[in-house]
Length: 259
Ligand SMILES: Nc1ncnc2c1ncn2[C@@H]1O[C@H](COP(=O)(O)OP(=O)(O)O)[C@@H](O)[C@H]1O
Ligand SMILES: [Mg+2]
Image (spheres, rainbow, N blue to C red):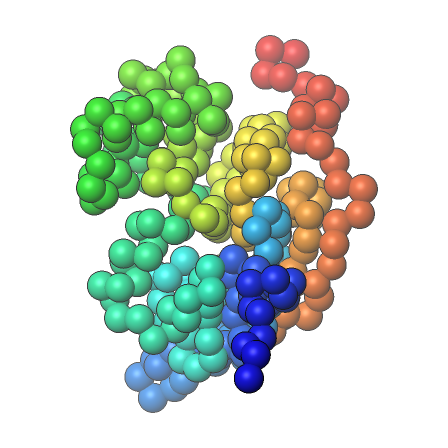
């Protein structure tokens, strides 16, 4: 009996997805009560997408991001990261995957104060098996990607909020992750600086990096290619962004600090 030739068959969207969640639920047990934070979420994200996640406070955005980032597991349902089902992985296995495949950026920059931009960027590489020289090379490269090559020896206190967040982005990129996850990355930044961070994200996305970002602000979500809106633990809307602005262009219209 002739075997079906798998190799020449076109891959389906489900197979090429970098992220695929299928009917995930998440319950938190709080003493006697049970919080149902995610109530059946299914979504696939293809390589090279830039997705904004929106929704009211308490709608499940961070719970969703924590699962995508392998910081937590769903109570039920499946999560496939680059085709591998990680929903049953234990903490150790999740930590390994997280370090190899995922870059995180948070609202707070979480940089070490007495440590230079370069050393902060290098930190995640300490757990990987590459040489000291290679770690240094990757950190220099990551800082260059966020436009901070000339700030490598600066300490966080010597940098603006926007520059500190860019160091945090470089740190998230240093292990060359498959996805960048950002939970309100512009939450602590003024409007111009927020758009500067979106310029960095769009540039990285142009080079093929897959990005999933939580934001409260519509103007910021518009820089993504697709918007998911959460409500009561479910995805209520999943839409492509039409006529997406380029952050670099928007910046030309915004006043600089000196103005
Ligand atoms: N660690 C936790 N323990 C108990 N309940 C939690 C925990 N984290 C989140 N929740 C609850 O789950 C729901 C969703 O929260 P979250 O995912 O943080 O929403 P969002 O990020 O959209 O504000 C909320 O009702 C929240 O109170
Ligand atoms: Mg949240």
